[in-house]
Amino acid sequence: MYYLYLIESVGGRAGFGIAANPKERNAQYVSHSGDIVKFKYLYGGIRGHAKTVERTIKTQYVDNIWQVEEWKTEWLKDGITIDDLKAYVDQLLNERKFLKLKLVATDYDFRQELKTSEE
Image 1 (cartoon, rainbow, N blue to C red):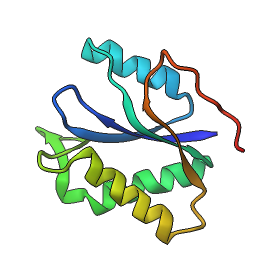
Image 2: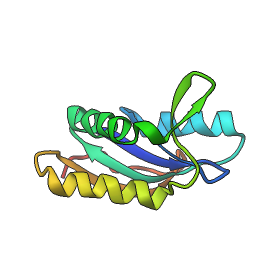
Image 3: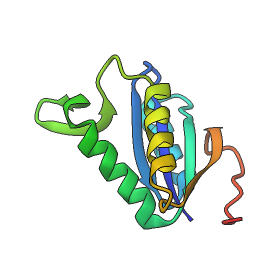
């Protein structure tokens, strides 16, 4: 299983990414932020489908990607909430039925066990 995660920074900025190992990826965020940072929404499914949704977010939100100098991040500009981002992802999954991703966890952090089967 591969994962698309939606994350909210300690300061409230919405972000996104993909990972093969969400436990390890979340621990990296915690290490860098100095605080427990949860994946507010974690979707699991086929690797290529997670990558497609991530790429679509980057394309559709191109004008709303937060940049630090010339570096484009996987965080969104102020004014776009985590709920806005989730609604967009859910809309994509609803409209493009071939994308086999489903919500597998909310408020996930590396201290939790995650069911990894594709049931």
